[in-house]
Image 1 (cartoon, helix red, strand yellow):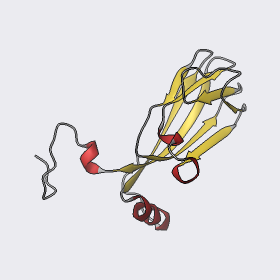
Image 2 (image 1 turned 60 degrees about the vertical axis):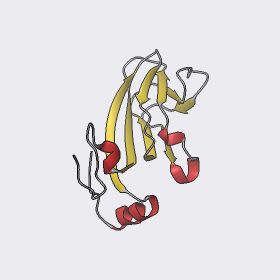
Image 3 (image 1 turned 180 degrees about the vertical axis):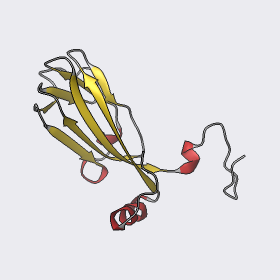
Image 4 (image 1 turned 135 degrees about the horizontal axis):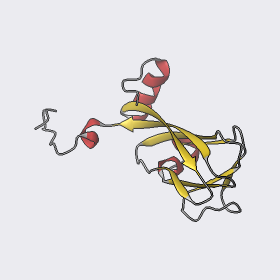
Length: 132
């Protein structure tokens, strides 16, 4: 995860979305049974999913996605992207997938807003901004 993103684009997004930004990437292996590609994140601003496999992958918001019901990601680079400006809250949701062949890799890149007081586990942020 990259913290403290720099440059004009990061500055624009920090101002627009009132927070620090983080990027993350992951790869999920999808088979012929439904599995989760990525978990929910209420602060996710953007999501890009890319099918790296030679199989067709289908994604959806529910674990009822199937090879006849979902967003089709074609083999070898099929992709879909979601962002808060164009798609509302879709990118914040869990994403599930199924493939027409085993061992199908789906690569995910996310952009999220990072607010420190939501990330501090078992701690209290004081009015002065300190942590106790």
